[in-house]
Image (cartoon, rainbow over all chains, first blue to last red; front, side, top):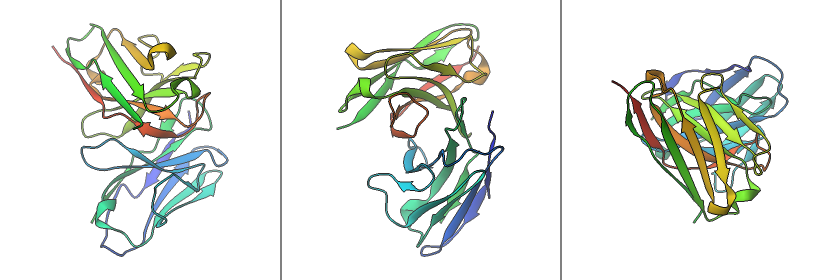
Length: 106
Length: 121
């Protein structure tokens, strides 16, 4: 199984800050990586697929990059509604696996 | 409106069975793979199982292999998860999630609100 390791596990930032979340895969997986955002008490929402493609309706302040084993989610100009937990997920091979999550506090 | 609605959760004793359902609307159901993803209280997301558009590709997490069975009825726009030999560690909120791809192994772009399964004596 491909293990996904996210860092940091939590962070606190201010409105307007730039936030960077990392996701490391245990083996090479090309760009088969997605990012999700889960607000407290809500279902996750897809932010980015194929490592860098923005899902429909997702603000342009979200940016995904990386390939192989190292990936990054960058949130520019952090907004209050960006609080919650962010998860990476690989789909290079079954079983599909998620990272442990990064909790973002504003 | 594109949506997924789960049902069938509840309180069940260890070793017993439960069947979850997920009803889809607002999109062409049989154009997409669908998955079950669970989240234990206070924990992260765990993929449980997925099924391709025509049920030709099915897979499970090791933690549920041999105990859970995923199925779908495209005529009813519905997904199911038969859960047998339930364990306390199966306690979680179970989401169904639509895959962007037909064969599966893609991104989950639509999620339901989840149905809670509690396994306890």
